[in-house]
Length: 151
Image (cartoon, rainbow, N blue to C red; front, side, top):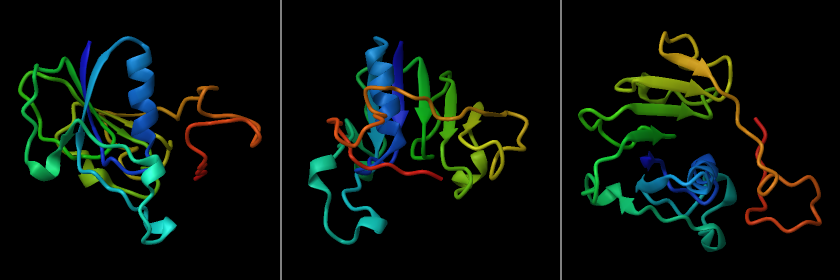
């Protein structure tokens, strides 16, 4: 399946795990959205070691894709709708953000069973998954990203 993943490409982003999982399942995935190299909570210093650049930086306009996607998944409402393509929002942090009210999405999945968007008729609770390659129990073990956020 050809999937367009829309997200703010921040150093620490749940969309990165979604990208890895979709790619590992054999899907052809392109990413689009604005690039962000600084996290407010980390101070003004760029986090180069965790950089995740999009295939298409939307700061330069809407992406000109090499193919029409079969599905759009967005973790932030950063892309416009493409005619005939299902557009899904995975609102991981719906306990703190309203994601533009969820307008323009065919289906919405929320990371928290309560909070913004959870009462919409096209919304369903979908808690984050666990992948032992990236969610490691021991701090002594190597992992590609060493930041954990609970909330």
